[in-house]
Image 1: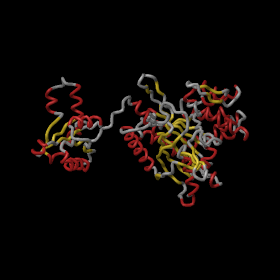
Image 2: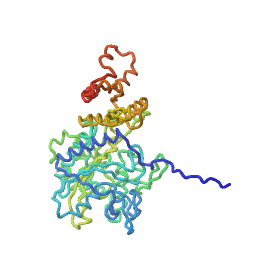
Image 3: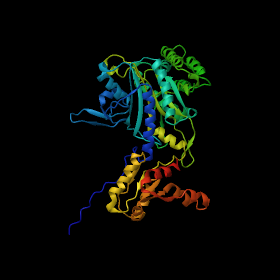
Image 4: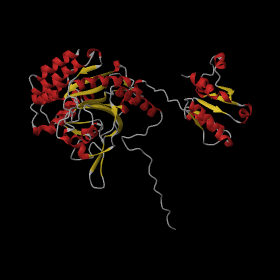
Length: 493
């Protein structure tokens, strides 16, 4: 007898570094994006949407590794063997769009964009391979005035996202200052380009790894907690000491002190002097600069190579703990800077540009930790369907509620009463509307306050008079459906 062939069943699993999202988180993200987008639009930025895939050569040398397109990004070839990559960020696609439509765009061109980006990098706590960014950029405006506006805009959008100004800083530095550092340690030659990039990426980890971890990355390399090894930049001890002194130089007790310290460290390097002048210009161009959550800080590097001037990072400063009581450090939840050479790759002429990018997914995760337990999203009002031949009546009830601005649905999974209530509980429904044969005959409905009912079931010794004044279940005229439901919802804000 022949063996029965085993039917292959794929394992249901999500790829590492990716995740499914449902309900409350998506609603929170949508609301946060709406608040941030409103700030962008109030400042005169228009929305733009670009494709998820770009030709890899459009991203060019700004990929994490140009020789291996699938390192750092996710890439594939199309039907004519051209490499395409899922966008690594929203800035490179913007540069391609501006170059392609340059003559028809107003200059400066101000746009914001919201969408997912993908990075083929090692995932970690709060770090995913797909996440949402929300960018704003000004193309065609030179430093320092547009840069000052970006600093202020950055602070406004982080606050609009729900973070108090006491819980974050916009940290500002300048890539030209880093160029001055490379001049100081004799690492500014054309042959040193790859080493400079490695050094910058190492410096960019200063907030997470500290001086000891960055020293290893600047020198022989570093093995992380998982055992993975990252090759170092191979600098000698003297150069490493100079870089670490640079990173530890700020912020000082005041913004003026920080600029003074930067000037002392860089001495008379040409690039450092230009970068320092641009930071002074940012401070002079931003109203009430001293009272805003903005700091100058040399440790802000930004790992991508395309930055050419001021760079920014939004850093959270509040303390948080995970469900095991361990401290969680979030650090940067967004960044940006000036990139005057990005459009030049397409046009052949330099086009000044500056922008910011907010990491929405990371910011939402941070807010959840800060609130310890985010309130569960309220589900829809559920209209129970107890009589199969009355489905049109139940749909009419739900439509009346929706027309009055109340989120509502009809249960469609059968007529079992207990199962319908169980469904309403799983949906986090605040109210169930019930009309069986008895209620219908009397021209009534029954309103079941599921939120109050759950609370009373946990506190059965509550004051009797209070429970009688706020019954968890009551009847109302069918004509008063909307008023009865709204009154019940109002109990719980």
